Length: 358
Image 1 (spheres, rainbow, N blue to C red):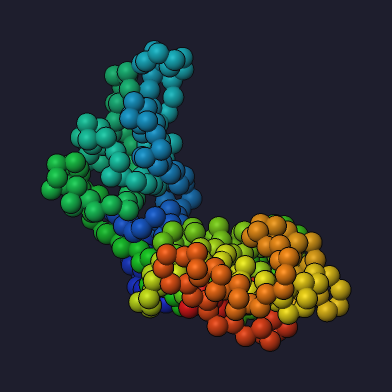
Image 2 (image 1 turned 120 degrees about the vertical axis):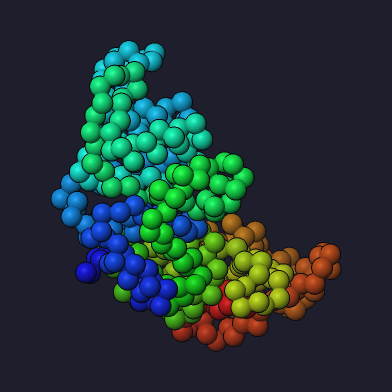
């Protein structure tokens, strides 16, 4: 079975894909575990699309997003007059998902007092709307997801053991993006194409230095964070090559490097000042800093304002500026070695990307 909505070719992704292919045709419960942003809902949809229920509804509910007093009504529905404001009879998510799939995200946040009722619906395949007396038959496949350790919550008495066993028929653990480095270029290309088409832009080149920077970042927010980063980069890109905006340097790199002493914004500021110093602080013109940096003049001026860059009253060498900055720091101040000659080949974005890799 092919899964068109999933992207990846790393070993961990292929293992997940094998599990999806195994469980999708089987009408059993699935528990997806993984960090925030790993694509649990995308995987749930892929399981639904590969099942015999694919022609019926896929209904998603985030248990953490609904107030405790309303989640019972959201799940099971309510009759008219069941509570103040219930002026009409309303179907819950179980009825809407009849003969389809119900995806319960953040299942660990389901109130403890509501868990027995959910367990009964899963076992008996029938429910009663809030405030109603009629028993309603439902045929729903449940896929649950969590970024927490459910078994630990069971041991702490915060989650029912019987419900845990009912949900955990077929568990799938989704790997974080930092363990799927080989998949990052595929995600980047996909998101660049998606957002460039949306914004009416043509971006057909991703500098190697930019890609390496993206691959060396830990991505604590996983695919969702990468998606937001690429969306921001596409918005800021003015040419055909992807421009990577400044992001804070991570405190500890994935390769166990020493803790960073500069943010990427500080490195960017140092580099711009260095180039301006070399061209006698000329911004525009064929020999100005904007051309050297590969940026439009207006963009460079905007970056200078944002980074607090102003021409010094007296000329100083770059080393002098660094020493002055170091005197104000309580700890060591280091600047990555940057080959200015590379600016003609890669522009500012290339140098910033290299700085990320340490």
